[in-house]
Amino acid sequence: MEVGEGFEVVPPSASAMVESMRAYGYSPGTAVADLVDNSIAAGARNVWLRFIWDGPDSCISVTDDGIGMDEDGLRNAMRLGSRSPLEDRHKDDLGRFGLGLKTASFSQSRRLTVASIMSGGAVATRCWDLDHIARSGTDRWELRTAPMASSERHLQALDSMKSGTVVLWELLDRLVAGTSVGNDADRVAFYRAADLVREHLAMVFHRYIDGPSPRLTIHTGGEKITDQVRGWDPFLTAHPATHEGPTEDIICPGGQFSVTGFILPHKDRLTERAYEEGAGTNGWTGHQGMYVYRNERLLVPGGWLGLGRPRAWTAQAHYNLARIRVDLPNTLDADWQIDVRKSMARVPLGSRERLFELAEIVRGQARKVFAHRARHGARRETEEIVRAWSARPTPDGRSTYRVNRKHPTVRALLAGEAEGKAAIERLLRTLEETVPVRQIWLDTVDQEGEHGRPFENVADSSVRDLMQATYRIYRKRKGLSDSEAVRQVLLHEEFQDFPGIAATLGE
Ligand SMILES: Nc1ncnc2c1ncn2[C@@H]1O[C@H](COP(=O)(O)OP(=O)(O)O)[C@@H](O)[C@H]1O
Ligand SMILES: [Mg+2]
Image (cartoon, rainbow, N blue to C red; front, top):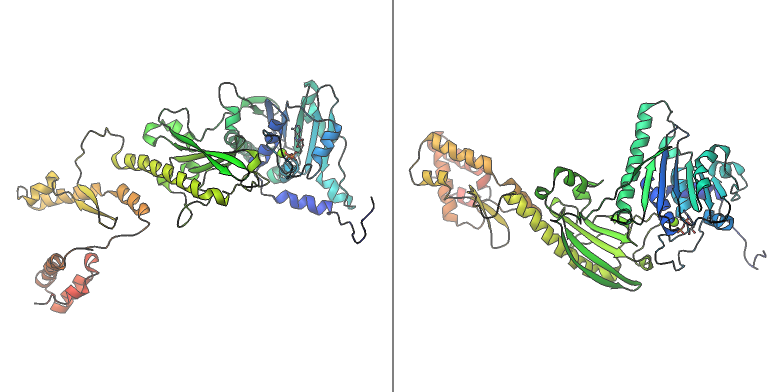
């Protein structure tokens, strides 16, 4: 090819490019999910995911029964940037950048082998061997056209299939570098990583693998397949106490997306097991918020996407029961700034307001369910509980907590029906045992740390009575001088704001 007048060709250095492409920030889970995306896009109904422990020679393979690729197709699939992100995609396609297969694989392994077969064709195999690229020095993008000998046995699954693809990751330097086959701790760590990958897939693809006739089955195991991945449904849609709100469509420049709010059942209504499962990998607080799906594949598992006013909402236990489903078509990738890893999304500016309003509604409802149960427990609402404390809002929206004068223990003392040390001790114990900690906690978060002060908005005369009485205790009982007694009164927490009254206490 002729180089245009006034231009020179500066291709990327293969070894440098490939090494930096390893740092996109994939986890083993997000990397495998990117492969499964490709399988789904290729029409696969089954995916076999294998984790084979062999110390530093361990490997991971993903096999699917999709349409597969021929020699040309596979060569192009291995190319970095095999398709422009600007191209329109089939509406069911989960790909975007033409990079996932390579970036996801390189993030975990230094040797990526792909073997594929299309119906009626022959098996084609290609291999990116990063050590070869690093060694070759010439900075050519040299792709192996046949598998390495050590890889062959892991590609055999294809022999018995009409069409399909095997993606094999070897030299898993990030996962197994420095391990040895015989070391138990190393092996356990490898299988633990495998479990996390399966949990991630259970979450990301739950809408593909759940349901009576699932679109996709993910089989998994080691050399032998022993298991199936079961979906993790963040909305507990099968639970009768889950409240599913209406679905609203929001229009964006590139198309429309839909939003559905869910209020999950309170802990009291879940079995211990269901509660544990509902917590997911990140826990209840980590999983509150927005779930962004693209073609029903989960991109963002919770969080508030920077929504909130005046500051972005942070995760707070009160909103644990709020989970909101956002369904995007793949035509909105640019508007939502979907990243290469498909782990991030940003709310388009024009949709922020409406999404904020909807989230506010769901959050409000979720908070009510959470707070009601937190305050009153799982008891029937018709039973009137006798409480030693009552909470009252002040006119400016804060809360004050009062001892209930009608509580029998309190009333008996006030009415003179009970007296003496023992009766007072009973009262104090009652109060100590029933301090409304949960309610105070709930209110505090709501009011963003605006605490009332002792005797705020109370007439000076009644504060003065109490200060005077305290002053007298110090004078008479303790025999302090006038100025010492005043000083002591002012050390009381409850009188901190009243130095003016203290100055008038002397006799
Ligand atoms: N498992 C597979 N089965 C069939 N084709 C595949 C498979 N994996 C990848 N491909 C092909 O390789 C191309 C590049 O994949 P990838 O690098 O993940 O980019 P993208 O998914 O964004 O297109 C895909 O568009 C597809 O044509
Ligand atoms: Mg892809």
